[in-house]
Image 1: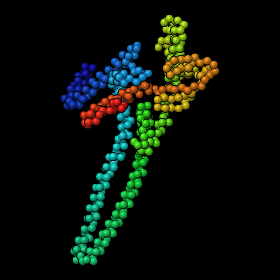
Image 2: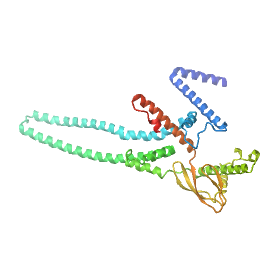
Image 3: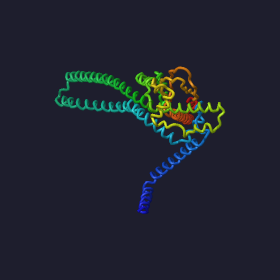
Image 4: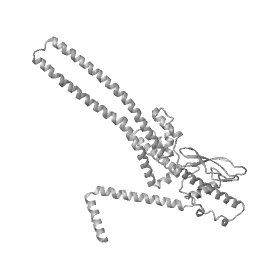
Length: 380
């Protein structure tokens, strides 16, 4: 049975390749490219996990474009997913904008000219039989001619008044409709920028202070990105906080062991396997309440992270921005806690890599088609 199935499958594949050679070639090439790209990314991730010194990682204390490019060039699948995500979010908004404000007015103007032509033709066809009837009845004297001319002028003035009134109503309706369309599009744009992450939120914030580039309606919506960024889940934030507190506590105890002259065997408890399981909510709460009197409360949310307020326990532990831990003495202190959004570092560096790549491509295209000095890469 298995042999017959293989025979039928191979026969079907050969027939498909013979009937549709181009489709088969494209499908084979696409699968091969996807498999090769997946292998490259898997190999890079494996090498990064095995490297004790993280030579292939991105530095966190300074901006290094070469390191960012080297990191993401080895991850084509992640880059392709991000590009597809950007297109899927901004593509519909851009497409609707082009259709509403460029294609639809052009099509409407064309159809209006065609309708005007038909109206003129209809008016001529309606007016011609009356003249022929008069000519056939022999009433083509000067008095009738003047009467017909007066009636024609009156009819033309009436049609002109109706046309002007119709155009005025149409302009007013179009203006109101355009404002509503802009409002809907700006809301969709704000939502798309928020969903795409901190880089695009920053772009929207920069546009929100440029009234020379965007209309007041769009400006109003983009200004909401400055103070109304939706927060991420508190459970995720508390898990990140618990992990940082645990690592800070281990680092402090490790440093105390070094100061007391402890050997390597005294620090064997601080292995990665000894890190608590922070997927458990009770473990997260236990770790946080070991340092703070209560679970921190959300104060504000921004594009890169969120701010919580909490009160340290007496003689609690304070974790600084550089990851160092310090024992707090005396009474409890009320503190502010800044927690980054999940995976914001990788997402931000990937967007920077895409922007720099876009700048390089734009410089090459403009240098070929124009005499413009390349500036996009340096600008970005």
